[in-house]
Structure formats: C-alpha cells, structure tokens
Length: 185
Image (cartoon, rainbow, N blue to C red; front, side):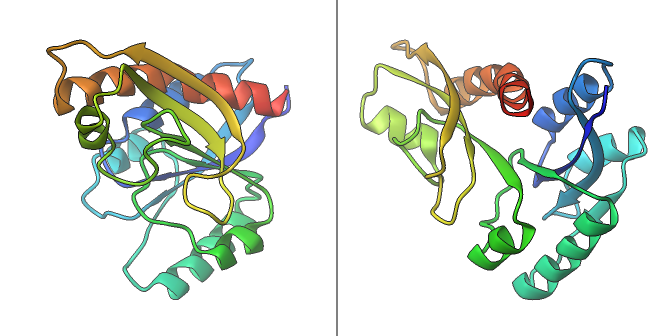
C-alpha cells in the first residue's frame, strides 16, 4: 500500500499523536508520519515522536519566520497531508495557501457550535444536551472548514470540564483515524 506522507502538528501531551502513530504503523492505514511540528518545546508529545524516530520541528514565537521554516521542512519531507492534533496556534491564511494541500483538524465540540478555545466551559454554561468532537478540513476561517465527521455523547448531570474533556478525547482517538480513512480512500 502506498501511504501518504503526513505531518502532525501538536502543542501538548500528544495523545492523538500516539493513536495516529500506532495506526500509521499498521499495513492498511493510509498515512506515514514523516514529521512532527510542535509549538511548545516542553510538549510531552515530542517524547512520542522521539520514541518512534520521527523528525521534529519545534517552533519559536516569530510567526512568519516559523511558517517559512515549516514550509521548507514540509517540502523536504514531501508532505501531502497535515493533521492538527491539539495544535494551539492558528495557521495564517498565507501558510494555508502556501501549503496548498489538505490540512485536517480535530476540534473538541460539535462544530459549528463552540469554535475556538474554552469549549468545555462554554458547553456547560449553555447547558447543552450533547457534545463531542468534529474532524474538519482547515480553511482560512477558524474552525469553519468542511466537516468530515462528528462523534458525540450525551452530557450527564455530574459532568464537569474535566469529565467532558476525557470523554471527548476518547472519542477523538477513533474519530481522527476514521476521518483520515474517509478522506484518503
């Protein structure tokens, strides 16, 4: 099977990265992770990349310089797909246009509701009946690209920010991989 060269962007623990790496090592999974880009030099996810010998690029805070550096690395590694897995920076319109290929994000809400940050707090404040995650293509507007898939669960009375986060992350692990298969096949 020919696999698509993929880069995963992270900022934190890398729990979605872990699942993506494990799946990408399966014969029938359609991606090969060739690079990890990280916005946080202390991110736990960097240890995962190192464990599986995946090259990493750690960004500094200078947006335009970093984006140019990333574009050069993406070209060097022949990347055809970017996955945003808990990446906590907004990609510039220029970067999205310059890459010119598919970028997929996973977001911890049922988009188009609750775009941006502090999702779980806002879900509870609005007394939503259900929540979950959305995998979508990235475009030039925040969390507004074409939706690939959504997964949801019903909110229980005792749920709080922490429990919603945990339940949502458990959905994300399968949702991201399922979306990749839908897009690639």
